[in-house]
Amino acid sequence: MSRLVTVLNGPNLNLLGRRQPEIYGHETLADIEAACRALADELGLGLQFHQSNHEGELIDWIHAARDEAAGIVINPAAFTHTSVALLDALNAFDGPVIEVHISNVHKRETFRHHSYVSLRADGVIAGLGTEGYGLALRRVATLIGLAEAAR
Image 1 (cartoon, helix red, strand yellow):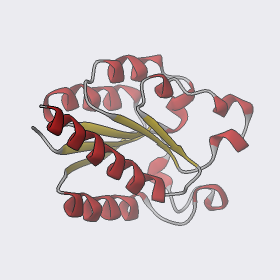
Image 2 (spheres, helix red, strand yellow; image 1 turned 45 degrees about the horizontal axis):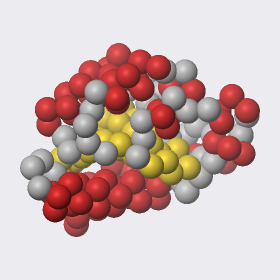
Image 3 (cartoon, one colour; image 1 turned 120 degrees about the vertical axis):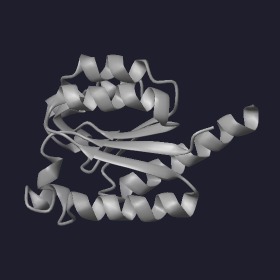
């Protein structure tokens, strides 16, 4: 069984470290990717790491993950609250999906309290800063291990 995990990042996350550091912190997306790669190696996982400001590109990566990956970690960013298309794509993926948000979306504007992605996610991590990515990878590794053990 594949132990590849696809990590997807939505719009504006390419600006991490420069955009609203009081909300999102000072780490860049490259910093997050490096930390994820180090942890993935430790957990015996392969890792694909992507970011796009375009919904269709994220959907294409989810479709590709159907054939390549055992799990998905996704920070859909603003698409969280708007994208039924991302939800539909994730519903076509059989492995575990963990949704990550750097900020605590429930302490922010009311429109951020609703997530279409959460309807598919096996877990949601919000408000733990960039550490949420590592926790999400650990959970995906656990879920992959449980699936392997059940075979």
